[in-house]
Image 1 (cartoon, rainbow, N blue to C red):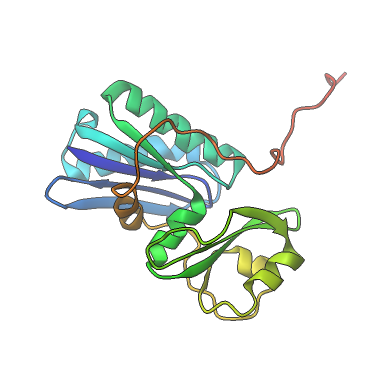
Image 2 (tube, rainbow, N blue to C red):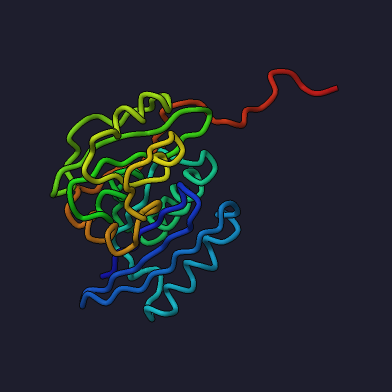
Length: 206
């Protein structure tokens, strides 16, 4: 039995596999865009390095958002398709939960949502959320971050925070693999806190 984690919500494409003996194989590439084209080859690479077939994967963890509208859909669609074929159980985690797990200690996480807003949430030592995940203006995010002992995520710089920021902008596969072992499985759904930046035109172009 093997576990797989996938993160395509932010600028990196991250996948990781952990075998029953604890061996972990992962890949993380800060690609910015193009997750849909790169996720297949990355998946095949980690399977090859781990020397397993897709059928060996029995638990799949994937970040469900918030993040890039298209990136979220890529990761979740891939996870659902793989689970359908292999019978694996699925676990959804938020992007901020995964970043907090990467930190491994109490941390305030802020992720840039663009359009003058940031996602924010604080976490305790065991990764348990201390407040609700919120989407707030940069000005409010800056005030929320002020006085925090530990801060992570690219939202800090975006809102003008000048304190120390941990160099964690995307989750590590190893931390996500640890995290999904502590969470119950279930259906995965994309987490949207606002509408997509790109929207279809309301009327057909002439």
